[in-house]
Length: 326
Image (cartoon, rainbow, N blue to C red; front, side):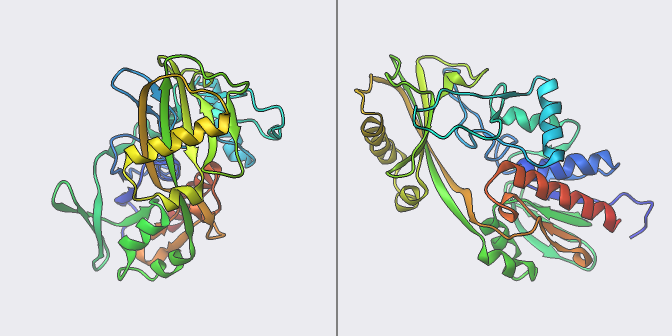
C-alpha cells in the first residue's frame, strides 16, 4: 500500500457507529463508502413515517451522554437545531432520570443525519458475502449482483450478522459468539381520542410491555390523533419473535389496556415492527475488534453496552485505529 494513494475503505452499516466512524475518517481526508441495507440512515435511531404523514420514533427512545466527546456532539447538534432535551411527564412513582434525555427534533434519525453530510452512502445495498484476497477485500452486493473491492472493511452490523459475514473468513468471528442481543417488538398505535393517563412516558419492570411513550410529547414529531409507541419486554419479544405482526398488535393492544387500566379509544392506526437485534444484554467489553494486518475492524454498540453512546464510542475508536494504521 502506497501512502500517497487514498485507501478504499468500506463501512457496513449507517447507524451511529458506522456514521461516526465514516464522519471522522472524512474529517481526516479519507473517503469511505458506506453500505446500508435499509432505505435510510440511523439504524435503530429510526423514525417511521406513515402514508398519512404521521411520525413515530419506534427504535431508540432517547440518548444520554457521559462521554465528553458524545456530550460535545449532542451540544453541537442542539446548537444546529437537530437535538433537544425531552422531559415527558412520568408516572408519579417513577424514578427521575439522572441524565438529560436527548431526542432528535424531527425524529431520532435527526441525530445522525448531520454526520451523514458529504459522505458516500449507498442505501438499499446489502453486502451478502466477504472474501479476503491477496491484499484486498471483495464485497458481494446482493441487490446489485456484482462485487466491489476495498483495501479495508469496517463492519458495524449487529454481532450475529457480523459473525455470519465473517464465519470462515476471519478469526474475529469467534469473539462475536459471546455477544447476546435481545429482540424487541415495537407497536405504533393512533387513537381517535386522547388516552386518559396522567403521564407521557412510562417504563415497566414486569409483564409484556417494557415502555410506552406519547409521540406528541416528542417535539417535532408530526401527526394526527393520540399516537403511542409501545415496546414489548425482551423476554416477551423473544417468545413471540416469529409471530405475525397482526397477532403481535392484538396481544400488545390488550396488554396496553391492562397496563394503563383505561378504556382504549377506537384505533385509527396500528403497525408493528420487529427489532430482531434491539438491546445488548452481554457485551464484548472493549470498543471494537480489530485485525489490523487484514485491514478489518468490527464494532457497534454491542462492544460496550446497550446505549447509543456505546455505538458512538465504538465508531470513534475504529476511526482512530484506521487513521493510525495508515
